Structure formats: C-alpha cells, structure tokens
Image 1 (cartoon, one colour):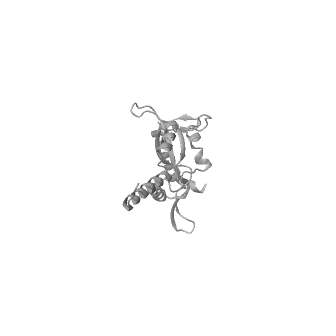
Image 2 (image 1 turned 90 degrees about the vertical axis):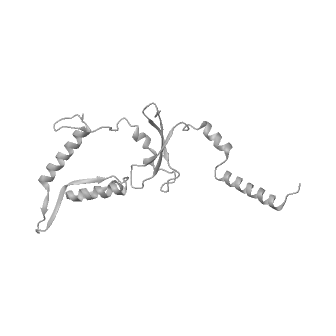
Length: 195
C-alpha cells in the first residue's frame, strides 16, 4: 500500500485527535457504560453554593420529581462541583453533610415564637414574624440609642444589638446590609466566616 505524504499527515492528525479526545474522557464506550447504570441519570442537576462559610464551595444538587406534573422535588444527592474554581469538586465534612442537614426532621421550615412565661413554641406566619421583629427592634433602639458619648462627641450608635451576616451572600447583599445597619447605628456587625 502506497501512502503519500499528505495521506500520512491526515492519518497522524486523525490519530492524534482521537487519542487526545480519549484522554480527555470522550471515550464513547466508557461514557455509555457509566450512564447506563448510574443512579443519577434521571435526576435534575442544580448548581448551588455551600451555605456554611465564606469559602463558597460549589455544589451539585441532584433532585427527583416531575416538574411537568407539579410534583414536589426531593433532594437525593449532593456533591462538590468539579467545575467550580474554589473547591474543584471537594467538600469539607460540613459540606459533605449537607444532605443530612437538609433532610433533618429537626430543621425548621417556618417561624416559631415562644411567648414570655410559656414553655412551648408556637408556629406563626412570616408576616407576623417580620412585624414582631420590627416592633422589638424599634422598641430597643428607642430605649438604648446613644447620641453622644461621655466626652460630648456625637456618636449616634445602637450598642445593644448585633448582626450576624451570611458569608455566602453576594457582595451586593453584604454591601446593602452593611449600609442599612450602619445607618441604624448598629456597631456590632460580624459574619459567619469568622465563627
């Protein structure tokens, strides 16, 4: 068989391209073997961020449920996102336990209040919870707001309230939260990343 120089270059380029694709994981036999028996093939994949600390590791959350029939989705598996540049698919022990935290029977899904003198928690609506929080904040601020310190300098601070911000929020949410709290005079602001 006579092979010309041009044919030889084409054969080499095709061989190099095929072997490169195989090395990158594009081997059809292996891919088909994995997808035929993989437990998450029917699940819906959603990208998210771990809520625990400020590292912001990427997550892949797999859920089952029929969206067309309005069936409630249930999370069945959580793993690290290999495409995320922060964690590259790895998770710390807290992140690896997210599924247990989400499916815990002790997890609260609605606001509750324990009235003074009571020993039981009572479920309330979100509107009532926001109204109660706003009323307590206003009462405390009206009582404890400091306009001047002992030297007579204007300080305008509210020393009896602290705020713990979420470290997994985006920059804009953190900026607005900080501005609103400083505007109210809150001095003690921290983030869960330091805990």
